Image 1 (cartoon, rainbow, N blue to C red):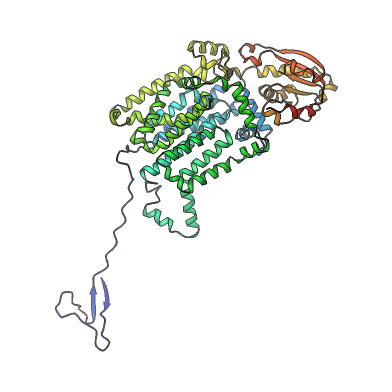
Image 2 (image 1 turned 90 degrees about the vertical axis):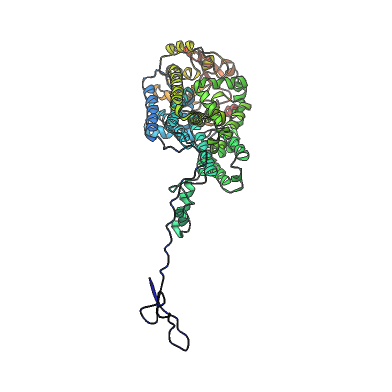
Length: 605
């Protein structure tokens, strides 16, 4: 209780309570007042759930990590036993790393940085070079499980989504080769995860639990802090923002492949027509776009400095490869996903219509918009690959929750449905594994591909039929060709070798000669093909010029004397793409004009 003196009149003694009155003081002139009431403690924050939201499940981290480790182990094991060499594209990206100019490249430089970093840290064996893509594939597996978790998927849904990314040939092939494809898939999936997070903020309330909430009493207390503590609190909130995830994914995507523009356009359309449109009235999406552009600036600066070579690359791609791709070919290519395509279609329907998935609606609209843009642009079928981890995740959760309305499924049968889907997808993955990964010799792989009877799997980018998948054919013959060129170079007189240069007709030949050539005494290689033109004519005089894969007609009139040295033919010739069969070798003596004078006119158009 609280004791205090009674107030007194100005001209008299202190006031007193009447004697005998309840609560009358025992001490004259002192009043006893009731103690102030204590405030009740604030209620504990509760998780905010939509009325129809499924019960949340924890992330199945340990089994997801086990699947990711299995993926890495599979890729490493295949690389250790494979009889195939590096892919022509891998050889080009390794050459980009050797000629790295971060702010002045005709191609987004992330793959070149990764190439040079891998070579410096791990060496240049096949296992070392391909370890980065294997790890990226493993991260993609984890993200697929995380997407299912964010869509309220239980353990079974998370493992089904992750396992589908493990077993599908599209992702197995991308995760095996040192190409920007798997990195592109990774950044797209990160961005779509950011859109799902953004949808959760709008649907269920931003940061709805005590540990991640800024609307709880603890969060309000943190926002009132002064000085450094307040700055740290702001940074903590910024780091957990889905806009930061979108900015990082967009920037890294721009550093990797310009195809991230299709997702950016799809996401923009989804934000405009989706439930998050009000976010565009705030500064956060525009700041995220600026951060993404800042991260990806080297790609844009390099294009501007070199005269936007990507436009010429797109023209060449359209005239040589995309001309063979129509609506039927693009849609038919999606069928190579096998049973996983059905899971993806179920996921797309769920994202666009199911009430339990409405926080993923913006991400679902972005996937559909990006798919339609790629279809309209007549892109290759695998260009749509990055949208599938999200669709697999949504499909896996749909097997658990149903689609609502008349398509509501009983939860008691969810486990059987998911196990059935996993069995179908796993069986398809096992059957197609020999044509997804280069694990068997070429003759065995060719018989396996013929038995499957899928012509699209063995058709080249230019529409020609092969016995092997083109990626497999592009991994054969490079060491044999390099040895033949090395023998031809060694046969030159000593006086000629001092000034001689080796010129390759395409980037695959140039990359192979540059990678394998030092082992057989071949000097630096030059080529006017694609990115190699930007590397320049080299330091050698180039007289004589040993040409590899250049037709005789292209050399006539450019050499004072042209000497044929034969063609490259070996045991693996029958498995190669047509342009790599019977590769001609010529010795161009006294080029007219000299090599450096000709170089500017050889730029790819």
